[in-house]
Image 1 (cartoon, one colour):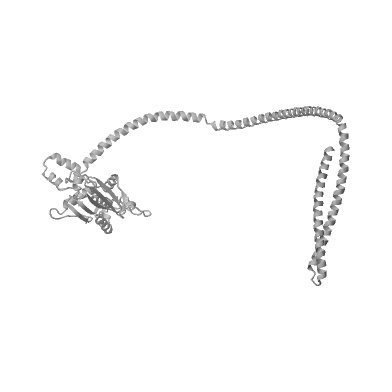
Image 2: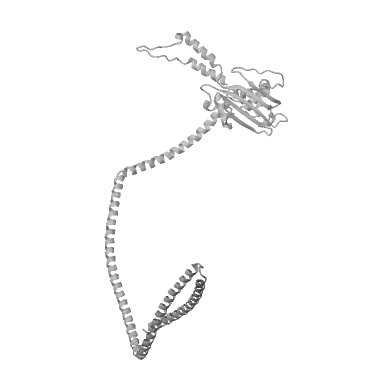
Length: 457
């Protein structure tokens, strides 16, 4: 089908009138007799080159575990007519059946099985069919995505499930959807269920042995696509009726919308001065806001004055209360002081006699204290003299101890002196300790006398 389509397009291109450039003041008219030999040769070359299909042509097919064959292919096909010959069971029908399956046909279309699981080789779990189609030229299908060829792979399991992968020239999976495969077949004008495109052995037998005109007419309608066109025409007619009903309903709605539009338009035109009114409203709002601000400021000033007056009044009242409290407290203190004075005068009157006796005792004790002080100072002086004498005696002893033993007589005398001095030193130390103890006693007595004197004062 693709070859026929390509040829039709080439023939149409060949009979199109050629455009020639215009010259000044002249027009060039071309008819059939004015065709040059070069143009005829060019058209013949175009027709010969266009006979080679660029899209929708089968490049190769590969079968694996399909029907009774473990591996068939890849079979590469030429761009024109191809003949597959071989003995019975060599795989001719398998290739034709695989072509139908690989291009998305139904299992019943092949007349070789009722389900896809019937195409899996006995003893195997799955079968694979790979069909590669050409995709070159201006009419190529998604040339940026697929490239120069489109590979369609079908994987059939023994359960009857079939999955499809559509790959580009590099082997990358582009899609796995049936809609994409249908779009490719429609673009290439490939009809799997059309007996003119694919005519298997059973279909040819039925056609040759059929004597019923009805079956032949059905075959004719199917082969020439008239049946498909009839279905499409019926569908278009139904769609047209539905669309017409929708258009009528929408026209009624459109009338209502037009009336509504006119109403809105009139209202909009009547509100042409809306912007001016809005600006005026904004100005009035601002003025009103400033008026409110002025009123509030006046009220605030009045409130401030009232607050200051109240605060000054409150301060005077607080000061008055403080003064009154101070006067009351002063009066209380004055009463307490007067009471204390009265008590003190009474006590003073009652204690004059005692004070006289205490004064006399104080005089006596002061004399005794003076005597004790005299004794204390004399004992202290005597102690200092004894300490000096003690130091002198120690120095003499040291001198005697350091002097040599030249004379025994002097030594004996010195020993005697030393012993005498030691005794004298011991006596002085004993006397010093006694004086120290006496001084301490006198100091304590003096302190007691001072305390009593202070108490009497």
